Amino acid sequence: MDDDPIVASVRKIREELSAAFGFDVHAIFADLRRREAALGDRLVRQPEAQRPNEAGHPGSAMGDLPGNTRATAGG
Image (cartoon, rainbow, N blue to C red; front, side):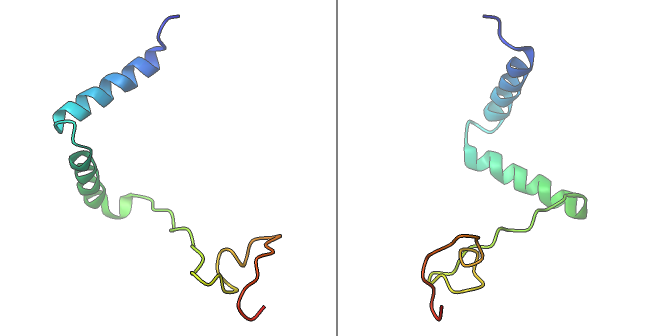
């Protein structure tokens, strides 16, 4: 089976990027964060997902799910 040229291209770029940072994933992501910071407002950011608080109180993400049968404080 022949390799897909798109997959081959992505793998080549991945290898080059990894080699440029000494195959250090922390260095790769530090560079990514620097690039994101440089973009400023040009970068679209998705709001962080709400996480339920530890007690699962009403109004938390878990309490708002349809069909949630978990008991919550005060409910």
